[in-house]
Amino acid sequence: MTLIKIDRQALLKPLQAVSGIIERRHTLPILSNVLLIRKNALVSLVATDIEIEITASTPVNANDEETSITVGARKFLDILKALPETSEIILSLQEKRLQLKSGKSRFNLQTLPAEDFPRLSATDEPQNTLSMPQNLLKSMIGLVQYAMAQQDIRYYLNGMLMVLEGSTLTLVATDGHRLGYISRDLGAGSYPRREVILPRKTIIELSKLLSDSNDPISIDISTNQARFAFGGISLISKMVDGKFPDYTRVIPKEQPKHLRLNRLELLACLQRAAILTSDKFRGVRWVLSNGSLKIICTNTEQEEAQEEIDVDYKGETLDVGFNVGYLLDVLNNLDVEQIDCGLGDANSSALITVPDKDDFKYVVMPMRI
Image 1 (cartoon, one colour):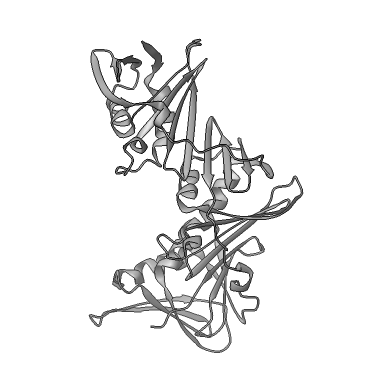
Image 2 (tube, rainbow, N blue to C red):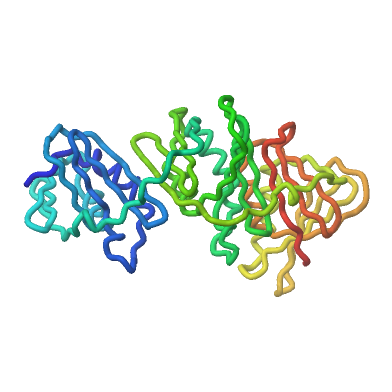
């Protein structure tokens, strides 16, 4: 039975969109598969890891017959990638195998029943629904996602806080050593305050899938799920159940020492100094004095790097240490000419902001060197 006849690129694009969440090894073999659904004039591909479900659809010739099957995602994807760009794909069901034909190429792939594929159950009605341009959400995520924890025992840090209040959307990420904060006015809507924590994997997939266009993304937030719909893709994610730290207490209110620095100049100095750091110790010293900021790095082999930047500063001398990786992260992800840096004493966090804007804040805890 022929399922679909479709151009290679039209099938490859949605398959690539959903394949990112599929792990190579699973205790449940069917989680390594992608669910293929043919219904009317649409073919949909679905992938899940139990916590997240992504569906991507593409139009095909209308057909009254509805069919669904699951097939190994990795092999299916590799075959489509290897076929010529302009080729046509014919997918057919042969007993319990999926046959893929293209030109003189033939592949017969094992399948598993579609009814065994675990779908995220539909939740109750969304409590909040908002719409915004894809490029706005993509840029907001990019400004703070690197501050998320990766495998912290405090599971609520392995994700990103999304706060909706009034017409303002705020994203916050922290790993306990640094914190990223970005807030933007959506220009429409008036929402009661709502805080949810989205898993790290959800954020990473969104940042990959969102486009740089003004095309809209619709976000539905319900009690324990969030749904993102954009460009023929639907991503449903469970929430992280936990209490995110009070980020307002982490962001310093008063920083007596203020510097305005050229972002690229500071980035280059830190990159050079970081050459002498090791994987185990990534510390650099900032020595601030009248008119000068020195960046100093030493290692266990008694090697030393020193960089110096002229700054408009007069006041007490400060010697404070930071993890150079945390500083490089924020400088690489900002796209501005200058940054403002607020400093306290050797035991105080640094606050990095953008001149004349208060919607972005990045806090870095000091470290002993």
